Amino acid sequence: MDDRRRPPVTLEHVARVAGVSRATASRVLTGSGPSSAEARRRVQAVAEQLGYAADPVARALVHGRGTRLVVAATATAPDALACAYLSRVVTTAAAVCAGQGLGVALEWLPLDGPESVLDGLARDRSVAGVVLVNTTRRVLGSVPRELHGRVVSIGAGSGEVPLVDIDTEAAATAIVGHLVTAGRRRIALLAGPAWLPCSERPVAAYRAAVAAAGLPVRVVGGGFDTASGRAGRPRHCAAGRTPTPSTASATRWRSAPCRCCGPRAGRCPATSPWPASTTSRPRSRPG
DNA sequence: TGGTAGTCCGAACCCGGCAG
DNA sequence: CTGCCGGGTTCGGACTACCA
Image (cartoon, rainbow, N blue to C red; front, side, top):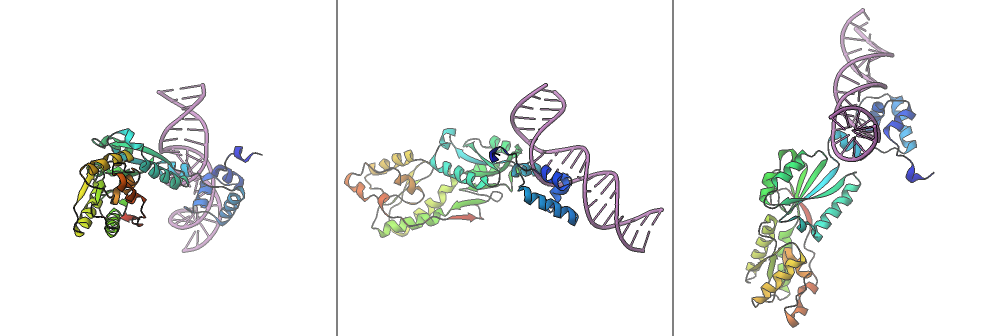
């Protein structure tokens, strides 16, 4: 017998073999209602013998909890979703959801009009939960009441939308401190897009750390990808400065080797050891 | 005999896809 | 357009046992 072709054991099978109805078998296995000791004994024995395991998708169907987790990312255009960061978010979500019988879908939230997409997600009963990425204040203000309690945000939160994020302030402070200790005196920050609220925290931390060291502040507007790093670095170098990467945008600097700095490129901190400065932590306060 | 508690069952329902 | 299918949960009603 090929196990791959063997039909799964269902509640119906268990109930039939145990000589009870599906309702009784369900109550016994979930412990959700009254049942006789004899019924419990038979049902539990049969379930164990047959290797019964409740179908998580069917359960989700009953509870109206949905069958998929949606990663909703704000971007100026749908093609911006094809980035390494979002791939990691989706891959990680899929790994976590696999054991729950949930699928993962990626949705684009238009920067200039996320309301209709959010309303659609709230009406869609197949949606178990929503993870907001690159969250803006407009998105936070547009989350329908129906999504409250099953929505979480990476980057920025509100009273209704809990926030989970890496500790970007501590990361910015630690990295600036590391670079100052290493003798750097011109430390630039390649920031995220101006419309992204979560960029504000590391930028503020960077400004404070640089100011505390008595150094000039230099913030360069960037994007999400390697290309923005390649574009931003020459802009800084063209101003006669040798950039030293810092804080939230360090990964973009590191993936964009500086070709314009000539011999000094060899001293690029992208090749230097970095402090372990970022940690994932839940945040209960709005970001 | 009537009231109550415990137990069990049938049917409805959830949703999206598919066949007729 | 309608009905059916998948698997599990829950509601309403039926049945039994027990006690006063």
